[in-house]
Image (cartoon, rainbow, N blue to C red; front, top):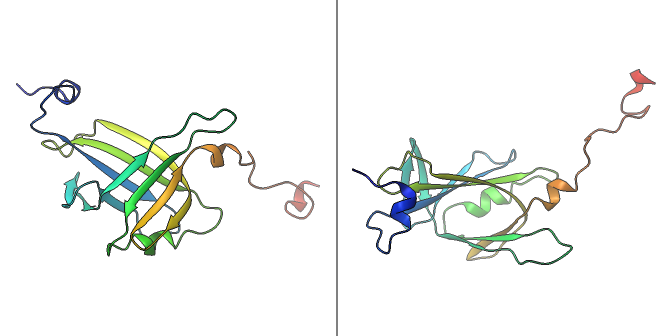
Length: 154
């Protein structure tokens, strides 16, 4: 009988382990980036994720400020910087973090959506701030009704 994901991960020794997958999407990208937090490529649900180590710096608890988490990933020859440099102003880049058991790559145990902002790229790594602060500060209506934008209602 197979142990469930939670029970197995709370044991002192987990002989199977899990894999962290990251899908980064933006309307400006040629296609979504599929990244696996490993040194080897990984396939889940028929999608090939490139092996590219990444990590998160957990947010600080600062009063008066929305929590911000920092995502860092390697930028060595995998075309990450090419896609990130295509981001257009005013577009939202979303990252989807997916946790799967290593022995059952098609079973998604946890899925987290992370809006990304302020992406910076250096020679060896790419960093992004993950926070809902930018989304929460946007206007509810993207188009303002005035005689110039909507002349038919005036």
